[in-house]
Length: 380
Image (cartoon, rainbow, N blue to C red; front, side, top):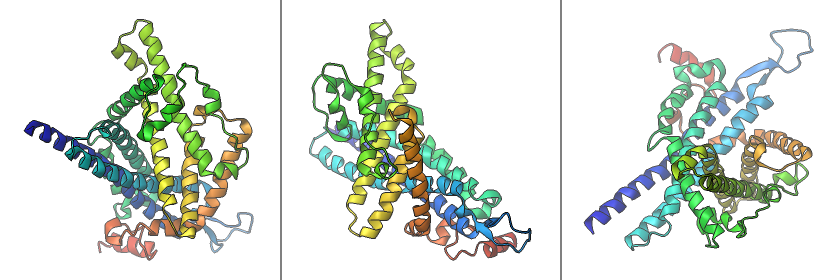
């Protein structure tokens, strides 16, 4: 009994750390985005009218005016919010599971273990990549120690391998998904975050093309959370179906389980990632549903939609979309960038990071970037 309690305590500690790392990825990325967004609003570069007579006195655009800067930063902003909301949800689930463990209930433990492994791997990797992108978005000043974001990006890279290597954790997550896929095929009902697997045909004849299709045909229609949820869910479903089928085929061809697993490992990692993106989107949507303020809800809905559309646009090979639909997705993204531009400063201010936490001359709340850089150069 004592050994059993110790094992549960150790297991609980591991899950707790993973849940914390998911939320931590969101908050750390949010710090980098805060610095980069504030600096991009202060920094001016590029004449407003390039056809006018050349003069050093001609007005210039703030860097945040440029669409490329908006795309790079607002993508990271949407990820930061998505990771924070997901981290909170996972932490709440962890607390419930730990309470169940005290009563001897372990039913939800395998799913929590698998999903937290995949989320930890995905969120820390994207968090590290996002912080580096934020540093790059600050241009030459981004490399300065006084920028704050350069040290953030450097320090955070270690989290990609803390509590386990990314690929190893994703393969752990995929092992659970393959097991659930097999059970769903046998008619066993799947509960929790992988319940989408209940759509699997018991006959083994799944129409994957129709699963990856959607009815949306305009930019407005693609800004529906329902449409995005449908696409994210079915992408995860199809990747699991096809990867499980390939594993089965290799086994029938005489490969050992380990050989077959290795030959499918790239696809297995993809299964984990698309599953986790499905989980992240669902948590983002759930957080928005809980918001009562209509204006705040509208702003965060746009950010959530941007997260979903960019994710789809970067993985179009996983969907059965025609040329017009792909074009409308990009149109929707461009429209959202313009709208989120209006709210980007309040969105980063909402994290309420004080200046002494950001420790950045570029990300000061009062916008006094150049005064702060000058003071830093003087050693003050």
